[in-house]
Length: 212
Image 1 (cartoon, rainbow, N blue to C red):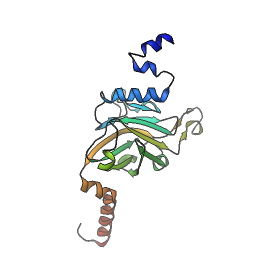
Image 2: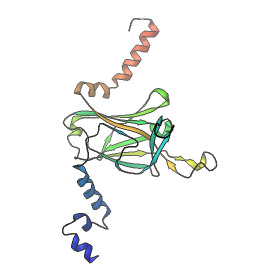
Image 3: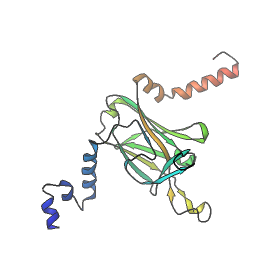
Image 4: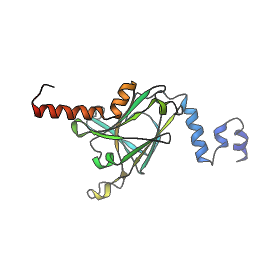
């Protein structure tokens, strides 16, 4: 310990041994300069985070049709990204069909401590996307390395599926996460539920047999 204390004068991380929170923040600050801005993260890419299970895939080795990582074994998952600044943007979390729909519907998001509305959107091939709109005001408050905190209220106990299925507690099967800057007009349109409203109008027009 005396030797570590001595080395701590020139190697700051060693001086933080025993203080998990301080050491964690130190490592994140060090990693910030070496982390590229998020465009699209895929399940088998490296990541800074906590509470992610091992990589899984379905399909031939080296040419998998689907790849994902479960949030497990706890309800709270922390992922760290450099996110867009000076602009509104959309975060999209694409889930593998292995994710139970109820898990997606009961997931909440905090971005560096700020509660962000998360919408579960069904897409093709039984997939679900979790989408969140982040305003320019919030984007400018984010630290250089932002914390994406997912809380999954519902978890899957593998042992209750079939005998010998496993003993894990599983939340979301995440396939991809992306962050895309959007214009102010697009931000307010989506916040007001524009895409859903447009879909509703199209359904009404089809029933009335009017041109769309």
